[in-house]
Length: 311
Image (cartoon, rainbow, N blue to C red):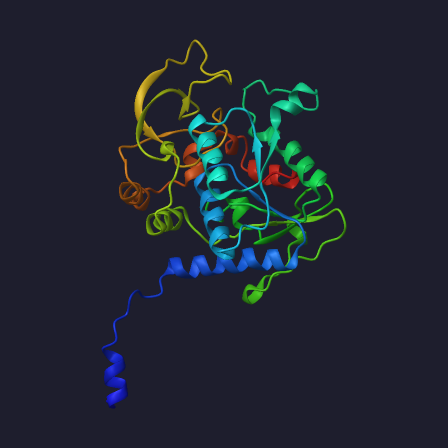
């Protein structure tokens, strides 16, 4: 061993390159690629953990400059109050521009009709596609991950949508060596998924490492819930529960956040990020499989909605 080699071998190493570093680097590269290649991006931001991590990555990608595109929230009107409060705090904290597409507005104008089951998640497609068309967005960042659901598992990072915002799996393009093709015809746009290769556990480990604040409903708390379709749902103005569905207090948390009418809580006593990570590492049921009633309509429920323009 030479003197130079020996000296080098004793140099302190602050931190080894981890899988989280690789995922972060890939996501930041994707976000910067979109900003450089496409003209008018927007980032979908609901206040859920995946969109929070995606925004954190966007802030890192352009620091110290501001994020060069707005945020868009498709508001069902049945959101968890804690999540909406978090959304508004975050927008104010970073001086971001937030656009809101309101499902209730479309119902009031007679464009959409309330569903008998009270859920509004499937009603988000029209406000989303209208907002994209109105603002002429050509790139839409989403927080979907491939481990969530089989339709999302086969979608590319750059997902081409036609002039009606519809997804055709047969039109997907190869993405070799992290080379992404954002070409599209006038009226079309590209959905961008920087977290495609992340898992739920990766997201939580990244939240832990980066000390990212999340809405409190992601951690165990007492809540009034009732049982429907093998899930614990929150009582609310959306129409639940029925007289035959008793309401009781339980210690629960949410693994994913969506419309109150179709997002189920899970029994949990995990009150910290570390406890949530331990809980997720031991589970064998995906977060959407455990908590989303809108995915249980059929085996192809998510793919059918994505073909129509859904997230």
